[in-house]
Image (cartoon, rainbow, N blue to C red; front, side, top):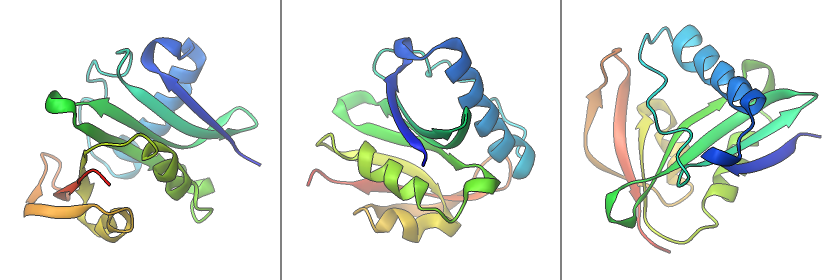
Amino acid sequence: MPTLHDATGPELTAAQLHDILRLRVDVFVVEQKAAYPELDGRDLRPDTRHLWFSEAGEVLSYLRVLADPGGIRRIGRVATAASARGQGLAARLMDAALTTPGEYVLDAQTYVQGFYARYGFIAEGAEYTDEDGIPHIRMRRLPQ
C-alpha cells in the first residue's frame, strides 16, 4: 500500500528531493518530450508544500503547492509514474492538497481539464500552448 508524504521544502531530505525530481523529469521531460528547465528554484522554499505517494522507496505520484501572491495557492507538477497509473493516486493527492482552505490556481494540460473540474476548478481564459507545444488551460478554484 503506498504511503502518503507531506513536507515543506526545508523538510525534504536530499534523497526525497532526488526521487521527486527523478519522477518529474521522467514524466515531463522524457515521456512528454518537453525539454524545459525543471528546476525553478521554488522546491526548497518554506512555503512550498510537497505531497507524494511512495512504495518500496519509489515515488509513485506527486504534486506540489506553491504560495502565489495574494494568498493564492498554485498546484503544479502533478505527475504519476507510468507503472502506477490507474490507481487513483493523483486523485488522492488532490484531496490531500485541497484540505487547506483558500483559492487555488493551476495550469492544466487540456486533456486532463475534466480531472481538475471534479475538484471545483473552472477554466478561465483561452487555451494556450506552452513553449514545448503542449496545450494548457488556466483553471481556478474559488474558496469553498
